[in-house]
Length: 107
Image (tube, rainbow, N blue to C red; front, side, top):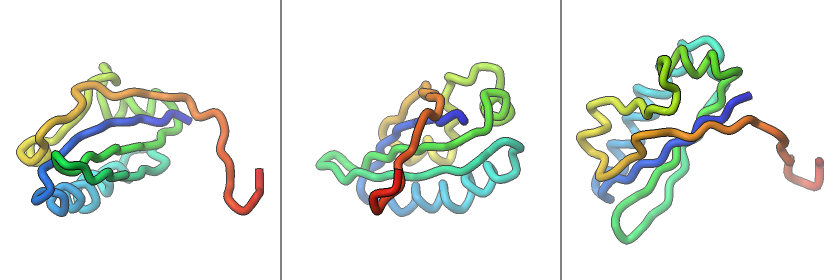
């Protein structure tokens, strides 16, 4: 499994708009891509706005290419999101999934 990680930041007043954009438009579109396994949206409230980390999981780099195109390191940021983002990564990071730990003492 491949984990794709991207960061962006919005002004506090745009937090809800960005969350809605991801949950109503982008995440549902991901579901149509063969090899998409899931994703998470993480937030951090900061003095200069709200920082987000988008973490998506893919079956393979080939699946990532179906979404991102041939240059998998280039961030894909829709124009609607660009309008409300103060700053965002132009490139993404990819990691190979190695291990996971479950809660309640189960390894």
